[in-house]
Length: 159
Image 1 (cartoon, rainbow, N blue to C red):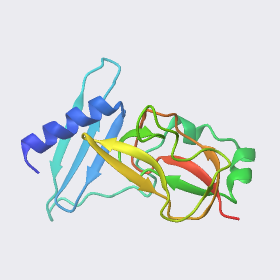
Image 2 (image 1 turned 180 degrees about the horizontal axis):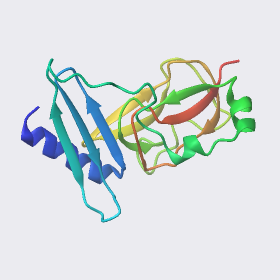
Image 3 (image 1 turned 90 degrees about the vertical axis):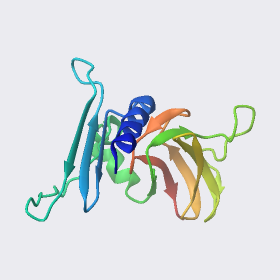
């Protein structure tokens, strides 16, 4: 990854509104944080070598206020549901365009391969298809809001 790619990643993170993004590959580790106390943008780039192993924590790299705010009763209720998570960072859209209807709504029956939403990443609109069949129980993200990798988007009742 060259300097221009890193700069583009930083610009994308700032534009998306995400507070922190971490990217790890066998060759390098990148951490981008925005919105710190002094509103400075911070970026770290660490090339990884065989001489410098880094321990990777077993906890998820990304947490959101929505995830940490769940109570035990909500967790018990949602344990029977399948969570559809974001495969990328970007901006979440429920509609293909502002004048079109939503791809899906709460209570709607979906099948494998149905388009659930669009995530815009770097000016590319990626259709997110369902990997499960069931009924949409809850939409966890507001339309046109930024999402992070692995952030829960929908709860689906598979029955």
